[in-house]
Image 1: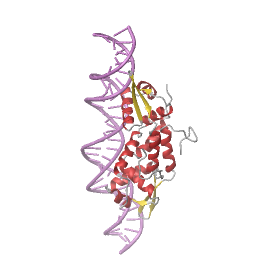
Image 2: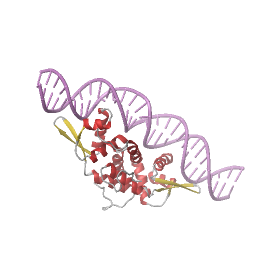
Image 3: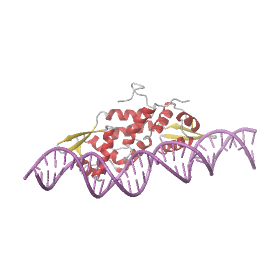
Length: 109
Length: 109
DNA sequence: CCGTATCATCGTTTATCGGCGATAAACGAT
DNA sequence: ATCGTTTATCGCCGATAAACGATGATACGG
């Protein structure tokens, strides 16, 4: 009879980790995080060196968990890192790995 | 021609995130992190409420990335959280999300 | 030595993922 | 209105993952 982390919270965290459970998405997220400015899908595709449809799919997955944000600009779609996740995601990693957090029992974002 | 995070580093980070890309493994890791003491597979199985073989498989995945450590004790196998990953994993999350890190260009562990 | 307890591994089934090419949809410009 | 550009979506495939039951290995207690 051990207490477990609430299943729904675990589900949410798992979805965040799953979004980064692919090396290409890691590279895309890190790229967008380093250049703080938005990038078009074409630029990202050129950088990654994979098919455009593949990159678009990865961006969709990253956007679903709101690690990246979309902003249509004229014809192109611009993606940028979500500054809020720059905080809440590493904090979630702390929680899972057992590091105490400022407001206990609260989800980090 | 954009610079990307090195593919091998991205692969390693992705393998870490993938290990936590499942709610059951999140719960197991958080449980082991909260109780800092080792637990047997039987105890963990009872806590999780899934088949023993399933829990064993999850523990194997967590152990492969060394988030948890195994220590055979008599008959039972005791699993505990790896204190070193309590540091390096959230740091990896920082790197991916673009937060500057103490020694740049170095992997966190 | 035998039985029990504990855990890992194997084989199976079902579902999801990651990649691609092809196609559709939205838009600006001509 | 049509064309070219840009992005998203669809269909497909091989590979991987998650769950289970059954079987196998290893240690302990009679």
